[in-house]
Length: 257
Image 1 (cartoon, rainbow, N blue to C red):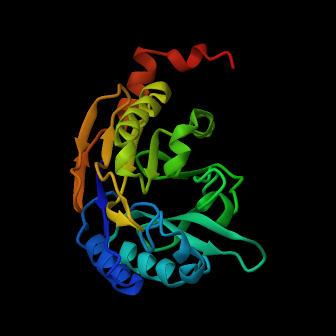
Image 2 (cartoon, rainbow, N blue to C red):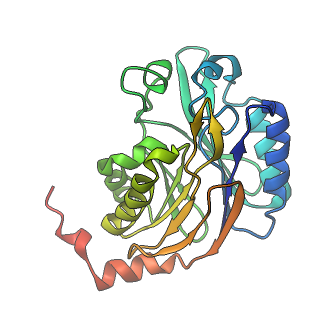
């Protein structure tokens, strides 16, 4: 299975619409991949809190339309990262969109764990409630977003729902990059699953981003890792390794809690 993680640089001098067009073009260039992954809140920047309300869009808004078309044009499964979603009957949400190769919406996930403690996303966004998995032809994908990576119980729930590949778009800050790598490997090892974690490059509202998107196998081995700048990280992996790992070292069968 071939996956491409597009580590987008968010430049504050680039308009959201211009970035949307540029990213759609990058997705189209990944024709031949099985799965393409974008980062969290790449339209605005994950730390550009003042932009959330002004750039929020309905679920089926301009980003939805552009990414659905790009997925269809490329013929790929596309995890389109997340957008600030405006629910007409509720708060804003940090919502991920997953499209099939035909451009149909396969899943939407509202981020459950919001970052910021008593400010930022934690007070500006509502919390999601539902775990989300998506069945691809070769693997079942469990969907999580950025700060979710710190909460292992969410990933246990995804594994219980059948997840074999855990996809995590993020806007992770450079000052905590060591945690990013450590947690991605930990989630892979403890759940005996692949982890595809796609971050951003650039600077969001003065916060330098970690980049270093990473793909980890069920034994915790790093199969591929990006640098700090914008790049496309492409990796081939065998989803069957999940079943083999869980059979050879059946630790999940010994769970008590």
